[in-house]
Image: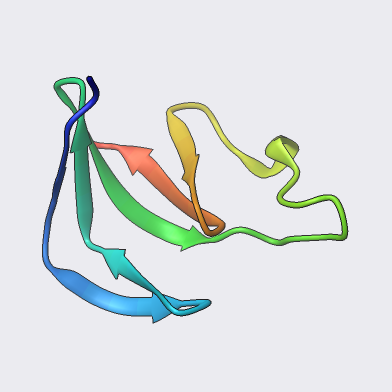
Length: 64
């Protein structure tokens, strides 16, 4: 089972909380930006190396 540990809430997007950090599977991610969406969802080509997309369209980068 994947367990996520959430940092402080720093805002909201589409009615969901934006957390400053998210830890999952011993990896820590820091909120970076909101993804651009289209009719099919959120294209993954907007992700850079060491970034992940969490619903609803939030891009986090892996902490160093």
